[in-house]
Amino acid sequence: MFVDSARSGGIDRLAIGLSGLCLVHCLASAIFVAMLASAGGLLLHPAIHEVGLVFAIGLGVAALGRGILHHGFMMPSAVGGLGLGVMAGSLGLPEGGVGTVYTIIGVAILALGHDLNRRAVV
Image (cartoon, rainbow, N blue to C red; front, side, top):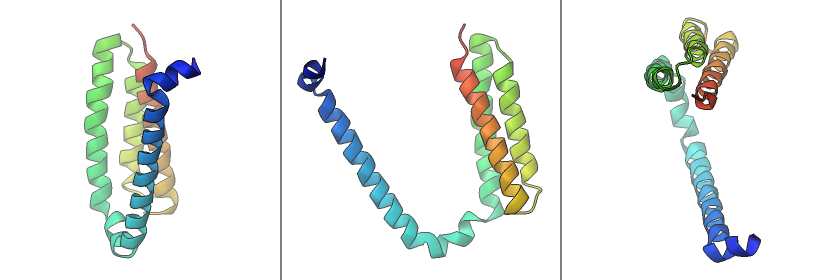
């Protein structure tokens, strides 16, 4: 099995992919550290969170709605909707502390909804 994988180039593709991931990691880390001072205020701006929530709602409606049509189960969509609601509610909380905790909880619940949607079978 290992010999067949080596002959087909599978190990090479894996090594190339790992090298590419290493390159992206190194470049992204360097760029992030270099821009940290100037981007700090931008990343904490409330509009970033609002725009992110809009994208999360759009992707949630598309993916979870498609799931309902595809497999007919409502639970993944309901769980995802709860996560989106928690994320939306966290926008009204103070930044840092409790607002961050609620955002993380909402994101985790939404991710669970998407995972349930992915695992649902007809």
